[in-house]
Length: 310
Ligand SMILES: NC(=O)C1=CN([C@@H]2O[C@H](COP(=O)(O)OP(=O)(O)OC[C@H]3O[C@@H](n4cnc5c(N)ncnc54)[C@H](O)[C@@H]3O)[C@@H](O)[C@H]2O)C=CC1
Ligand SMILES: O=C([O-])CC(=O)C(=O)O
Image 1 (tube, rainbow, N blue to C red):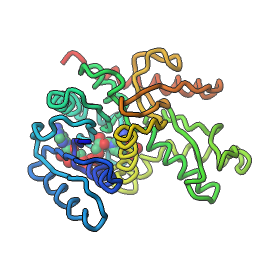
Image 2: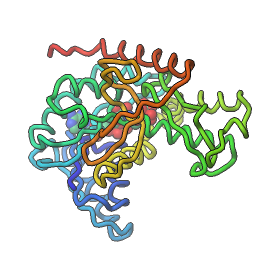
Image 3: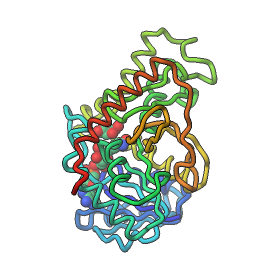
Image 4: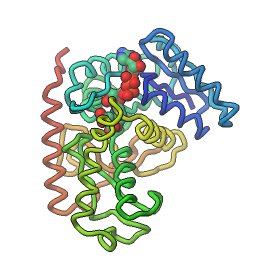
């Protein structure tokens, strides 16, 4: 199993580290445009192999896509992150050109690759890859919901004063400060609805904290987060690599599902060796449907800023 990660920055390197520690891939190639940067990150990570007990071979390359040839899975983290006070949508100008050229170079050397798009604004970058490549829709996956759901479980575990592993929950919708739809009605602690333990106000607070999870960390760190993003990507990569058939909310191209069309947005999908093997349509109540619709309008508005004629 060969995995390429484009962008050896904070998220890309964290993702490579978690993939290596989980020890399921034979090879990880890191690519960056900064001279020697990916090579340096790869060497640093390889010097942890004997300490952490993994056999994954990590190499780095500066913009040389021949090194990525025949990758099974590629992750796109190249681009700029936001600074405090910015929205993810403000990154579109620079990141769209980067994502377009990177996805085309990847596919040139790995025509059967499954792509995981991370660069922001992620739902729109995922849509851009659909519009500008010939990959089947099952092989273009946007990562956002897996991270947002992990943050939702973290916030819920804080409210419940329990380990996050006791909590089940999912966030669908756009990966943006206002567009996320945390499904509080369906969240449970060991199968018991969280409403059995928490007031409506406390549950709403968890949902609001979840939605601004990325912005909160960006304010604290001066740039956006990387550990949980890297871990979330590594879980998607592992689900595909090990054909796990696990369900994650991912940004997928919708063609009528949830009453939505011609956009990529976070919905539950089954991930296996063929990428997105199924889009799962769960029953939403009227309020959730309305929030997802509103979220989709925000994503479509950002998609409208893309120049698809180039
Ligand atoms: N979807 C999600 O849930 C998340 C998305 N992000 C996004 O991921 C992206 C990366 O974030 P960080 O790793 O923190 O940024 P970073 O600045 O640490 O790393 C980005 C790397 O991309 C490289 N790069 C730029 N243009 C390139 C090109 N054409 N080819 C190859 N490499 C190139 C840069 O040299 C840099 O090393 C940002 O757009 C950020 O907003 C970050 C966290 C979560
Ligand atoms: O907040 C950001 O800009 C990066 C990101 O998508 C996240 O951490 O959720």
